[in-house]
Length: 302
Image (cartoon, rainbow, N blue to C red):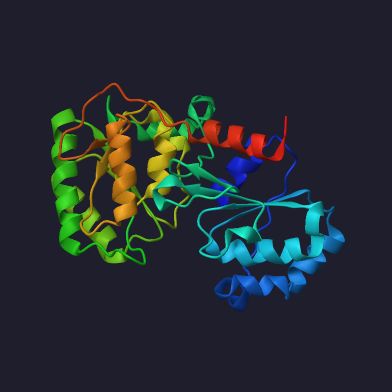
């Protein structure tokens, strides 16, 4: 969520300040409380910092903070909320909501997936000496594994199946495997990945959530990328690059996410992963460019 907020702030080409803030439980649970209740932290920020002209928030948990600040600053500030807040859209000046949520309104810009905080130019600029030590073979494959969500909890058997398919792809290419897992990846799943890969692959590296995350810098040395289907943000981000992107599906997928991925397949941006990795004429996603055009037009920015 932070990455999406920063991405939009950068695209607006205005000076911005990133504020890490965990709203009070009641404001997260009942965002409309922001109309009558402004937490002490936010009131102090308004007193000590220069007043903002734009406030960007992402995710339902931050919706109440946006509403609270708007209740004080009124028309002196424009509020932009990213993702579906699941309450009246009239509480925000503008919203950026993924098109697979199928929400339309005069103050809604539909985005194809999530905003990306990096692009192809950024990847080329990365200069990480340590990356050269990671690339020990001609081909390097990145596997990005998600995990549990409110609506989906993959079974252990699904992680075993994922490993089997990945091992086949790695052996066919004689490639090195790099794995990143998220905070949503269960410890049991990580152990399954480590066990399966250590038995069948001689050259692999798993980055745990506690290690320094090599993403997105690691993308500079990657030849193929496999992402599990629950990871909409990562799929969106890598869809903006020219590198081949494959999706490994978990069962019981969210219908909205399935629709999003199917659309990317139709646009020849991604391929389903069934055990084979190959080059294809990949089209790129242009969510950032399209979104900022609509934002500037909506507010009359130049």
